Image 1 (tube, one colour):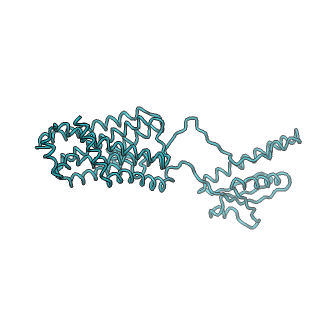
Image 2 (image 1 turned 180 degrees about the vertical axis):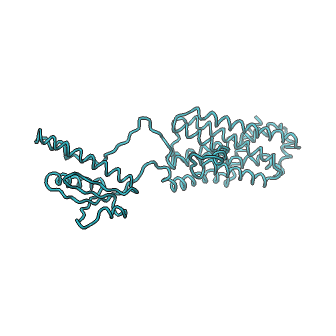
Image 3 (image 1 turned 60 degrees about the vertical axis):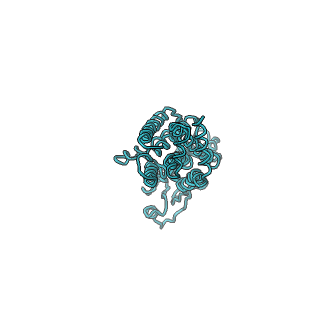
Length: 373
């Protein structure tokens, strides 16, 4: 009962600190909005193709010229604009200077296409469309020989402008910019729980209230467990509120296995509280504790991908990123959400709990060597 009362008192006292509450909730939400909006282009896998401009010279007459003219009109609706060049104008030179995406010479022998190698994507699109047109024209010539009245079925009046559709049988899901920053900002703010945990016992000494706790009819272990439990509950609530806000405000994707995701985040909170508590016992003053923890949190956030996405690091940089707790936590949460890999939670949970136990042991042993709390 004493543990519950102490934990509840810890929660109430921390809720009265408006600045801490605003920081824990406002910081990740603002960063989600700013970074998720500003860096949205770095998360897109699609390529935007602008309208293309093509020069051509038509030296044919008769049936082929009519069909080609119809092709030019239809291509315009797909964003490919053909411009007829005069006989004196050098289309090849214009393409070399990158003034046009391509140049066509149409004659009785066929179509000759000149492209600029710098525009490989546009060139591939033009080649594909022209190949399709020539194949359809050749089919039409054979149809005319056998059934002239069926020529209309070859050059159908039905128009299609979505020529290419890409469908994957096993689509690779990936987070959008807002989804990514919802995850990394949540895990980052969970790590900030170490700051409040560092003053759990040291704060009592600084406020000169440690002696009251010593003379109170409560065991030191109950005080220790109650204050740690209260801080864990408070930080867990903050993390859940950040998740809720990101879900409602930014429609962030937290997947279909939030129970497993929550378990990873909860063990991170335990890790953060233990880290703050352990560091507070290893240092001599509150100021040095705050400096060390802030440095650790910022480095972990930077190398853990909280501010920008880190993809395929190599060498020493990969080794440093793997030291950041946010690296293994973010990796686990992302796999759970986007690949339904629930087993990815096991390494993250194991590391969080293992390191948390280590820092708690440091705190307990240090507390026993000291007088009072």
